Amino acid sequence: MGFIGVTLAFIMPENASTTAVKVAEAVLIPVYGKEKIESERPFKATLENGVCTVDGTLHCSDGKGGVTTTLCDGGTAEVKLSKADGRVLKMIHYK
Image (cartoon, rainbow, N blue to C red; front, side, top):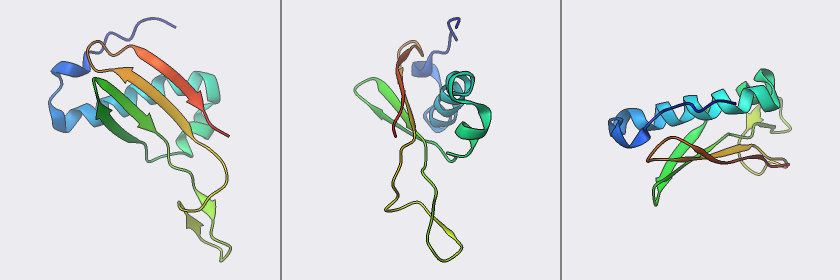
């Protein structure tokens, strides 16, 4: 996989989260598949100590015919990106 070349440090704060999610999805889909990754939307991006962490949302049956995102068994994708240069520092899918 080639270098994406995104510098998250220079993106306006209101757009940094959206950009980080797009970068994360771009590296996750070839590995885990489009259907799996899209099923984990919405993704949430947080920034701490120069590292942007993007996590998926786990959707589970609530036992009543609906869907819940709390008290679920399972895991989601997580990507850690360097704010300075957009490099993927870590990519994992929890079970």
